[in-house]
Length: 577
Image (cartoon, rainbow, N blue to C red):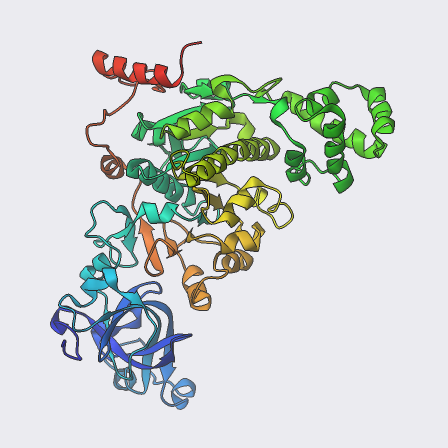
């Protein structure tokens, strides 16, 4: 049995003792009156370990407080011209005795004290269901504690970053666990959520347990992205994993201007658009409920594959005749015609969506184990185009995964690969008004039933339907500025009240609170830099440094034999027409 003072207490920095609290609201820790236990050296979000009689507890600091034994200290503080000066003897005497610092800590995990490794055996540690007794000693967590709890000894786990105040320690994630349920990445503009999301996607590609479909609104994830803080270009997924990532684009001209050659150009057929897609876009197109609903009347009149093309081919007087013929409100039908006619400027729309640039080409790549990035180019700035394409393609892909999963359950085929669908500006798809109508709302509620999950990235989580938020298995949140967004991120979370104080005090950049299914306990992380060191860690064993497909002009190419091999693989995926 390890002594009450803790294992090897000389190697740990003692902070104080437990003096009160509860399991629901957290524990109160009175700091020792020593130089090693100063409030100024303890940050919200940092870790502590508490040594009880039978258990050792791993906890996170959620608040700091100044306390006094006697209220007279508040009303008659000791004098002195400078804090800690030689003449301020009364203040030095009172500090740590009549006046002291107090921590609020949230115990999250426990491990038995009779374990040889103490908290180092925390891989099998359990969620805290008890609390220590009065006067249990509290220590600053050691690097060994952090490493054990967050599986740093598992070299296959993904290194996300370092915990608060412990740059040498590592927080690692099991990406298979992360991808098994939907994930939310949140943060205000400029907080670093894009880099955090790109890191997670890179980890998923290297890990290989799931494939991903990335709807790249700002062309940030395919070939390269922009680090606005450092004014430099950074590698995208295609540069890091040329043999595992396939890039498609809706805007070939945009790709050409950026010196990038996509693997395919997507064309969406008018015959692929359904009335349900119009319903989802009702607010973005400024349509009344009646106007949006007329799309269903049009489908019944013209047929499911021909309704939109036939409707848009009408001129003004023809619209009036059609309204009388099918018995709908003329003003509503005219409004719908006027709004949808603006889609003629979408260069990605065609009469029919066929070939490798259709949804079928994307599905084929995903089924072969390739990760797909769809860049929107200029259309990423048009929210209606982004929502239309993302919802339409995801619906088709989801139908394929559902069909394959049902066949597999019936013993008629293999399980479909786990698929993670990545969307930005998620609140456009998942507002309370439309979440029940979009395929993304269905996927979020299905809880991975068909091997499909979401990774949603947004700066306004308060705009996302509360039911969808409650289904997110893991949440990673950078700094947020709005109280409603803070509350939304923590909705349904265990110990949400205590975590709110931690979340509200994150640094404005490069810091995130991670909690939920993929981590054993909440943790404040400084994500690692997205730099050459990260690129090196993402290198696949035996993989070439670059691929000929998608290399901008002027970039170095592979040796001839390797280039031929890469081209052969591309031709197999995309047979020459």
